[in-house]
Length: 257
Ligand code: SF4
Image 1: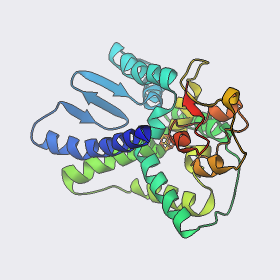
Image 2 (image 1 turned 180 degrees about the vertical axis):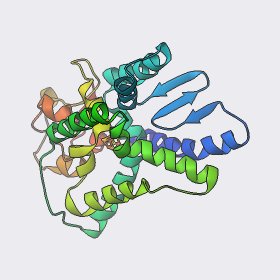
Image 3 (image 1 turned 180 degrees about the horizontal axis):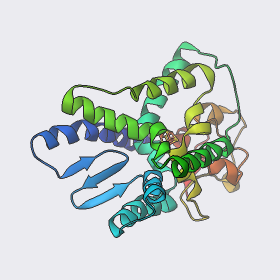
């Protein structure tokens, strides 16, 4: 319960940050600047690793500031897994809200597919190839967290939003009617790229077989937004996790390793 509350506070704080940034910047306070493509906290820059890679691919250069700004979230991901997705990404907060609403009103999605990273990796590969061919960061055009953060800043800075927000509407409709959490599970190149950075010691939520009291009721699979099945206990399932909702499982045997 405490983790759930902490996660909600973190999600709301991230959204609040992109309301606060333009307001502070307008008043000449630049301690926080930028977006989820690249964020400055005082003198420290943190760059979305996929955005950073695209800069390197298009400019064929990388200075130390860029390298360090990419390394910070990558090391964080290697240690904590895809915590960015589960705890900070504003698209995830939005998708969770609409998933909650869809379950309340009993929406039956068109497709029920098992989660798999392969389509995401394919999208990622195509985006990076196009970035090299076209010479601009193509994957940023479909970076949901980047778009939301930039549009929020734009709205609170200038009172206007751009056409990029259409993508967010499409994602919400797609996940609401077609495939539950289909964007994050199958398409998003940002989450797909972060998912690559994982080692055996990366933090994950694990089902403890040695204290097995599982009655195989399947409530955990229904509770998981990504439709992951911890009862299988295989690493390819855990590779997909956002480290968020397993703590709700009624069996209470999931734990942070
Ligand atoms: S997969 Fe993409 S949209 Fe989904 S939570 Fe992760 S970064 Fe956000």
